[in-house]
Image (cartoon, rainbow, N blue to C red; front, side, top):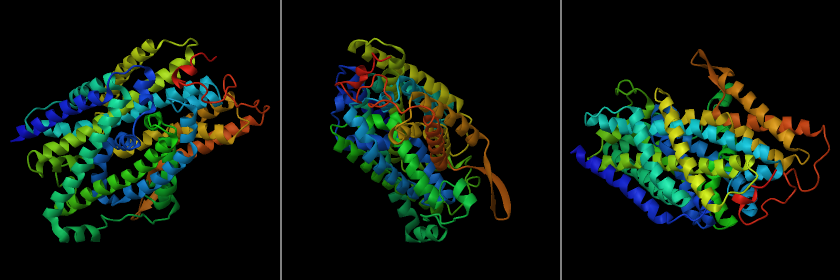
Length: 523
């Protein structure tokens, strides 16, 4: 009967590509390809933001984390994320929307010059390669389990390549419109799958199962251990989740082109702000749903350890239940939901990386403005290039065994502080010029690499002392402080820039109807 599951999955894959292309229509320009000419409804953009950041990392890792003792700690994290999004909606989105940008880094080009704009964009695309490589690998986990059920032992690498090929079809042809509309559908599918899993598990464990999970701490929301070492190393300590989570969200949603590009596709500033804040509310709901799945699975499995269940890691818990604990067709729908999460984050990453390559990197090196047809062709070709590299990086992670969600957060910690710090430097330190910003940016990347890879803090639990890295949420504020400190000190050694900011040509940000081409002729 597993053939029915495969039929459901195949129909989904064909249907989502068809819907994406139908909704996208024919792309007429690079701006249409990247931001849909700013005509997308705010609610679809909000769903796309959620689908972009959720991916398989959330779908498979959050239930496993809740099962193993994190409880509803991810919901606590999401509350901090909401605060960060409100700040982004208030402070940064107006800069982007009023400037008519198609890339967040065009603000840095206007404020400091094209060197920082290109540097920030290069940093973004390589961070995306690593982070999305982890995400793409994670998506192969449940697919491999399903194929193994049929005796088809495909490697992770084969699965990654096939998934990338399917996703790149509608991303290449449909651009951001196809990405946003398919993201909205995919979000509904995997969130609906979580709700369906909750219903099935509730029927199995009943009220007694809820009570057992509650007594075992699987519903714990706030981590109130205020030991300094715990706060610095645990992503779920209350100050880390709320304060660190808020600053992390400011970086991920205010300075990462992956998310900003979606907001730039809305019709107005107000709609962009609504999309950003609403996405935070939906993320809280999602984290609650997936955490509830994990808590109920703990009761369903009577609290057995992962090794007792025959699982190699926490990330295998939810996929294993989907395949073996649900009826045929229902399990196919939930696997399709996981595929939807994977394809949503992958398509978003490919389109945003292509956007940043064309709007930021290429424009930083070429003085002349290509024609619209040339820009559109270039946009599509760079999508193919990044798709190829993404698959290669995903294959490099095929030996990973840890929690892929936390791995993704740590990768972001290398660069998010420098990216957000550059934006804040431009806003808060009026004396800072291009040299200050570039030096501060590079110093921050170097220091953060050392902190992520080397710095450890001794934490004592149950009489045992172990060395733990700094929690991922604190990496962003540390990076921001370094950027502001270095850039601020350097700015004291020269005169303040002339009125009009540190832009390459002194023009006001956002002059001109199309920011994709307006910066091309700058020196």
